[in-house]
Each structure stands twice: as C-alpha cells, then as structure tokens.
Amino acid sequence: MPFIDWINEEDATGDVAEVYNAWKAANPQRDRVPEILKCFSLRPDFLKAVVDFSYELHFQDGHLTRRIKEMIATFVSALNQCPY
Image (cartoon, rainbow, N blue to C red; front, side):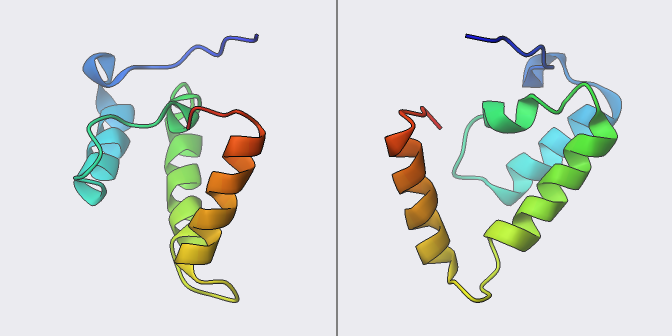
C-alpha cells in the first residue's frame, strides 16, 4: 500500500496550521483533520484550494442535497473498504 508523507496537526506551522485550524473551527464535532486532507499538506496552497472547493462541491445543496451526497460517499467508501 502506498504511503504519502503529510504534516500532522501537532507538527503544523504557518499556512498548513492556518488551514487545519480553520477546518477544525468549521468542524467542531471532529477531533482530527481527516487523512484524506492531510495528504495535501505538503502543498498548503493546494490544501486550502481542496478544502474550499470541497465545501462548495460537497456541502452545498445543488442538484443533489448534502444528505444524498453523504449517503453516496458513505456507500462508495464501504464498497472500497475505505476507513474514511
């Protein structure tokens, strides 16, 4: 299984720490930044763009409601045996 280097929350400084802190503030029910986001941490500019884009794409109602999008994501993760 491939391994991607990333910056953990306790080691984050500068722009990465800012993005992590903003994500945590927007998601107080979560105690850790998901690893799927941490894989972009070596490029803080890209990490911020991914977080911003994902909120627009996944967490806004559009053609599909957020609830339907979450159900699809959960189903696909289960099919892929993904721990996220």
